[in-house]
Image (cartoon, rainbow, N blue to C red):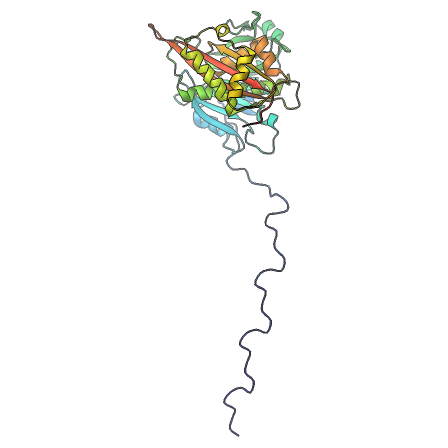
Length: 362
């Protein structure tokens, strides 16, 4: 029998059931539970101080004489922290550090509770400013130490840090080759809220020394002032509001900066001569396209840097009352400088701080 040359039934060329091209159930595009992200960067780790006196701020153990590399090891490099490098008006390199400042799991107040400024000369620490509810310098002074205790232990008041009533608002003590300054809230509980230590070889107390107030330095001074004031508000709790810290707005800052520049361009050196009435402040803010219900302004002239400006706000009864008022939740800060150049330059930095309760147009 001759075999069949071809199959008796032609095979099906394609499957009888067409396969499903896509899943019948659409997969979930995002996880139902947010995974825990590994922090980007390295956590801080304290180093051997080799006998140097420790200034411990919220667990970060610092000291005069540390190197830049040692400071960076102590502070770490976590992306959840705010860490900037800048220049001070005196020419020091500055590391500004706000612990948890970028941490989305922290409240706004928590992001502003720990603030450290570190001053370096030739990559060696010559000054430190601490603003935190947990800080201590070598067992000598801590956050919350009373002014009375400082005085009884031989601390002396600092002449250039007086309240508007003439009372002491800061106290100093020499330790080895350094000076500690402890700032006390004279109009509040009269306890220490900020501590500064500086190597005496680099201490600057006069505005006749060479200074640099470039645009970048002025902007950094505005930011540092804001951050010191917010640390004060959060740690002392003196502002009667659910959120103690205030927010800084770019448009409001532009209004403050414009008037600050006008003061400097006019060569004004006395804040009393440049105070604006309520209607003038309101008009300036409204002209910037800002909508609000309550407003205020404070002007300071003659401080050298952010530490000076921030503490001057707290040392002025009127300025402090504006700062801690629950009527305001937003501020803007602007700084400029007028320089007399007859012989040795004399500097008159000024700072304008505008306050509003809310903002409708950002």
